[in-house]
Length: 87
Length: 125
Image (cartoon, rainbow over all chains, first blue to last red; front, side, top):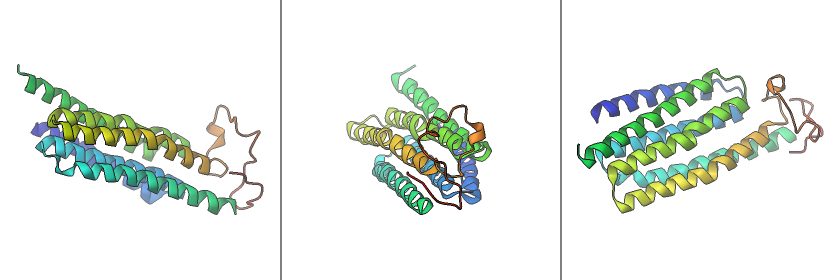
């Protein structure tokens, strides 16, 4: 199981780095919102993989909170961007 | 081979598949040309990748309370990811974020005047 944990960690770290590059480069705020959503999905994946590796369910409520947070953040950025652009 | 070992192997396959989908989305976010194609690639880890990882996690934990929490996370993600993607796409469509030369068909074009970045007239979002 340790080899699986190392593989998953490396894959998620590379994916997170590429996503951060897109958040930094933009170009629009909606691109950044989509990339932030992906980064949050990667974080949820990492927490779930850690819980699976250590057989420890302490972190599972965090996953529920993060799922709600991603939805609210993405929708509010979309509303803000629509209002700004139509003026 | 015991049942525990088999379940662990299935869980490992699920975890690695989910991580690979996340990596694919990261590569696509850097390489794809505009917002719609990036959103298309970004949905993979948010739905399929997350469900695979949650299945892998449930196969390792195997208790009723933990599986209920994981099902809750999965159902919530399935319900909210399309809504968020729809709102982002609707906010992006009338503006310059989308490369119309890459679209095969643009079915909304007849119904919605596309607005340039600076003029800002006639937008109905």
